[in-house]
Length: 162
Image (tube, rainbow, N blue to C red; front, side, top):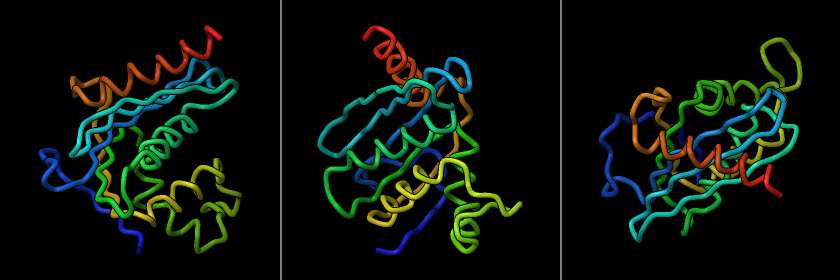
């Protein structure tokens, strides 16, 4: 399947997609202890995912949340809409990644792309699906984004309690 990145407008419904995912990452210190959260809505129900890592960054947690959301898709290929409040994730996957790949995973300065392991995994997953992306303003009373934020912080709390 070819990789297709399409920015969609809010108001998309389950009739348009097999899966709608709200994703978020959080970090206490940067680097520090981090968490990721995902709120998934599928045609056959909904689910929530969260987790965390020690000594990570907010950007890594944002990427991890998107990866975990797409990995959870029940069928291949799926039409997936991913909501994110991360400009880094949004611009990286819809704009910058094409140039990085052309330059052998190097950025505009010629330096290796940060978080290359996660970007490559996300690119691979998007290639298996018809993935669309929508940026939403964080902490702006968007219920899906707010829930993903709660889940990301829950991932941190779970890691701390181990």
